[in-house]
Length: 144
Image (cartoon, rainbow, N blue to C red; front, side):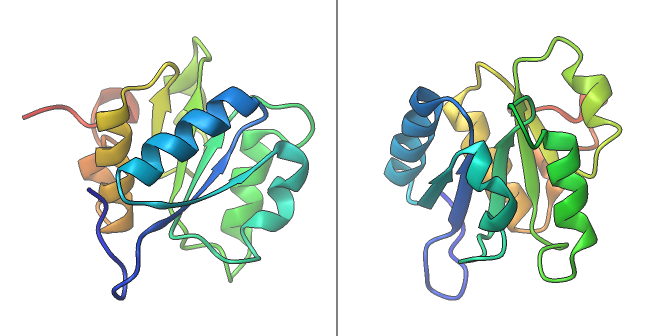
């Protein structure tokens, strides 16, 4: 269950070029209590500025604006620099790539919905280490 921010649901901006992945993320996160705003890669550059989300969930590998450039862009702007960034990717080298980016957490595709929920909640609470950032590979949160 996501933490509530100022008595309103946590807003997640889910960015992926695959409509099926966007649909799964929207349905699963809405069911978990999040407010979900989806976007395609073409919409990605402006999405963090309009209706600023509490956390951004983004595929790293998409045509056009790649995840690395997007992450650096979000961190460089004062208005969006503090928004937690969580990357999703099916890349075999995800751990190595994620280590070079300004991310709060990352999850490999396919992802476990419970781990995704735990990761997003930890990032929103300002505890990205709880989401696995400090674990080897900074991957998904480990079950206790």
